[in-house]
Length: 337
Ligand code: QUE
Image (cartoon, rainbow, N blue to C red; front, top):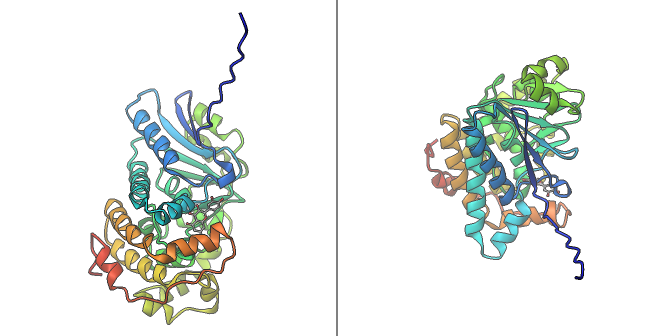
């Protein structure tokens, strides 16, 4: 009898799920793409949360990264490929499932604790900021940089940024959405976007599994100074109204942050933020879904993703500034604002 040596290659799953004691643990594991979320990752997270929701042995959920960076966003490169090759229905399904997951997290009946270091952008905020706890290290930053890829503020952040627990403000949300301002850990604490700042995430899952979420208060660092807080007065004055009104009031620092932005994205996002100011998160996500479907069909999306992520040349040639009506008309709730 010959002996066969069978090597079984198990494809690495991009999200590892386990249960430690009574804690469900989701570990994002696509480090080469900075954990940017693809459809498989969205499905794996959603399936685990569905399983654990009614599992009495799971008391809480932790989401973290296997590497330094938490998550750079949605897999917009794949979305661009899908649009350019005519598989737009797959792109629609991906974003629709991602936004549905954001709402599941916001309404989750158990503590949902995100442990994040490094980059927390776009879709990374969607799977962290809607939970009950967001724990960040001192090297973390949060940003919604969609304007530079001709897209909109999504994953429920068009709602959350203007309803921050400690600093609810439509103008602040509009500023963060349009400029892609990078919030420091102290900015995140001051606004209530994050709940705790810690010196390291090492050993934290085990401590949370042993002691519960109370373990976080024992290791939390004191908040430091938030530079964003200093700017709040000016932001309130400059970032209200339509994009046409806002663009007439920008200071030099604003203009620098907006230098790479798609004019269409700025117009569309401003309309989205205005409509979502008075809605709930579920309705805001409906508006994002509808407007996103318009945006990624327009040339600015493919061009922006090319310039920022594919060629990395930051030389996007965007369409000129449009009037807001077509974006306002795409909204499904409150689009008369
Ligand atoms: C806007 C975005 C994204 C972005 C940059 C933007 C985004 C995203 C990434 C990203 C970054 C590094 C990677 C990667 C993706 O960058 O959604 O795979 O390695 O995922 O200006 O929306």
